[in-house]
Amino acid sequence: MPVYNTPGAYNTVVPAGKTKMTSRCKGAAGGGCTPTSGNYAGGGGGGGAASRTVDTAVMADIAVAIVVGQGGVAGEHGALSAVSLPNNGGTICSAPGGGGGSETAGGSGGMASGCIGDYKFNGGDGASGPEAYKGGGGGGGARDVADGTAGSGQSGGNWGGGYGGDAFNDGTAGLNAGTSAAAGGGGGGCGGSPSRNGKAGGNGCVEITFS
Image 1: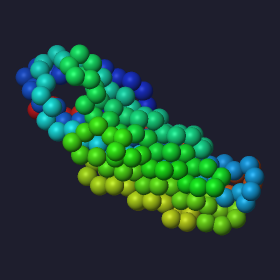
Image 2: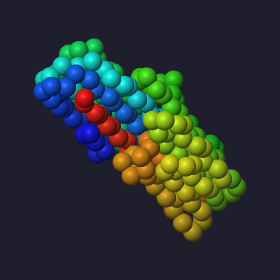
Image 3: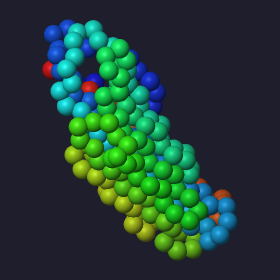
């Protein structure tokens, strides 16, 4: 089962004797906000979505293109992960990334409605900063069997959401998809002052299986 968990673009081919391919795509997460004004309580990033496409018909030596999404830096959106057959029908599996946190709200989780696949799941939303000088937790990444959970207060959602920071500590980064077995987890927002930083969301991941 080839696993691609470093952001970037890859190319492979269907091995000899294989006629089916299952693809699992996990989007990258958004980064937590580093606020510069207001009550200094940045929102956490949203977790990445996930999708699964089962038993796509393939033939030996067909080209397969893979894209692994990069987690968003502080306040930025996470990138999509996808699998396509460039010469045989285009994209067959994709999962969008989560949104970045803002000064007033957590980032939205990657949406199942934006996925391509037989099975589609939402990333968890990032939490808003719960009070002045406390950052919100990142949303948990989706798995290819279940939605991610939202951040709550300073706590990150299940499956990789980062913890929100405060006046003395930065937020924590979301887990990468390859680490948590889910899509990328949202980065924790920061609180306290502009000298504290929201953290990056986790990277995405793609797995393909031939049979």
